[in-house]
Amino acid sequence: MCIVSCVQFIIVHDRPRTADPCSHASQEVYEGEVTELAPEETENPLGGYGRTISHVLIGLKTTKGSKQLRLDPSIYDALQKESVSIGDVIYIEANSGAVKRVGRSDAYATEFDLEAEEYVPLPKGDVHKKKEIVQDVTLHDLDASNAKPQGGQDVMSMMAAIGKPKKTEITEKLRTEINKVVNRYIDQGVAELVPGVLFIDEVHMLDIECFTFLNRALESSLSPIVVFATNRGVCEIRGTDVLAPHGVPVDLLDRMLIVRTMPYTVEEMIQIMSIRAEVEGIEVDEEGLQALGEIGARTSLRYSVQMLTPARIIGETTGRTKLNVGDVHEVDELFFDSKASARLLAKSEGYLK
Image 1: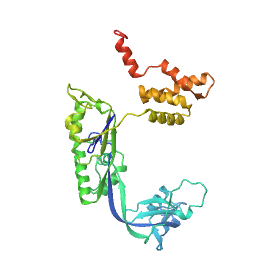
Image 2: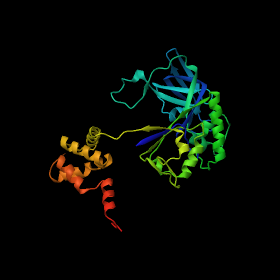
Image 3: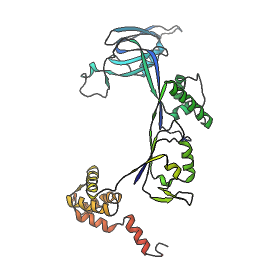
Image 4: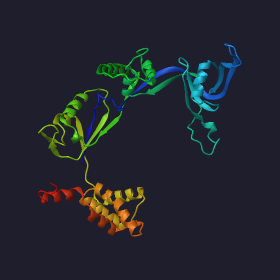
């Protein structure tokens, strides 16, 4: 098998989650461990017997000090959505009032013997500080959220539009505009691109139209790392009569790094079969594993792995839970691998007509 690694690639049509722009914004926040959380109620101004929350008192503590804040009732709703309680470490954005629960303070780590909580240390510095907020989004998220753009054109407005449901068609013009905005923010240092990894197996199955499209898409600066895999040597490019290495056009091969992998040895196949049998809960003796490794070297590793289940069934019918070499040979006589089947059909003219 040859693994073809191409450094630049992006599918422009679907824009999958293979490129991840991270936005960096420095904002004023209030951060610390919650020491007090007390909503203050007053009479409902609309009348009636109900009461309404007028404000919220919250105490935040850091390693340098503590501070009590008087918050708007709308922020109390955000605190409830984040399930904030005393002992949690949170931060509140000063501009928007957005609340983010970071985790549970590590001072409460011994509170329970077993708990599905993420414990974090007590924040350092003052309660009121400037903090760099990092938000991860994908190009697809930006495309979908800006199909019907609302609000400003800055990066935070684009991020805020992600949560709004829309089903508008994403056009090529919109993708181009998003690319320009992302590139501008990358140049300004506001955002950085974290490339993903896209793996495409059996690349020789792609036709010439796909390769033509990919060749153009390689020019994008927002492309992730892609890995192509194929087990073909020199073969025809699908849709043409042209022979090319691995069934890939030569001009596309020029953009790639080709890594050659060697076939498994018998010892490696035996080790793989041992691990696979352990995963599937099948007991196989040493001679059986040796036979499976030799059959895998003669045929293929996939055929050898597929023999485990029928061999287990044969062993169970005879009242044994541990497979031996006889079970393996019996399965090998019952079934054909792809190479043996091809040889049989080549010798039998008119067979299966």
